[in-house]
Amino acid sequence: MLVREAMRHSSVQTRFTIAEEAEEALRALNVHQLNPDLIILDLSMPKLTGLDFLERRPPCTRGIPVIVFTSSENPQERSRAHELGVRECITKPIELDSYLAVIRSAVERWSEEAEATTNGV
Image (cartoon, rainbow, N blue to C red; front, side):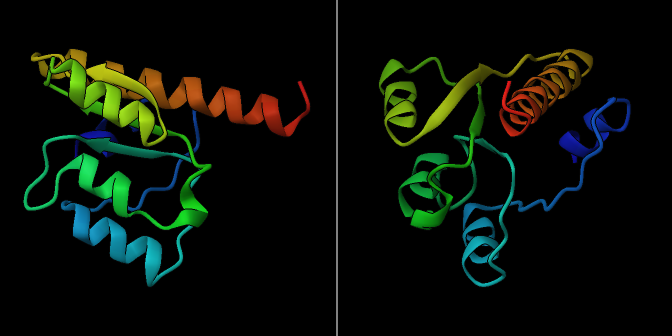
């Protein structure tokens, strides 16, 4: 997975649960009661879209920051994603190295924000 590859060279210590489809992610959150620090998703996923996932995710996960990676330039999709709690929509770069760097940067930025919040900064 690209997220795992991106984080291999990051300064942030991470542990991942990766779901290839929105339904799988919903099951992980509902059945396994995962409590992630950050949710990263794509708006274009098989079967259910990223927006479908956001609409159906458990209420207890509404406060978890969500970063969306998307190739969509559709302002309605992006607006709806923000309405559903997405903190950041990032346009996916086409080049693999750039894509990996963008993922790494986003996770590091949110990790720093979470640490600052935890430490009362």
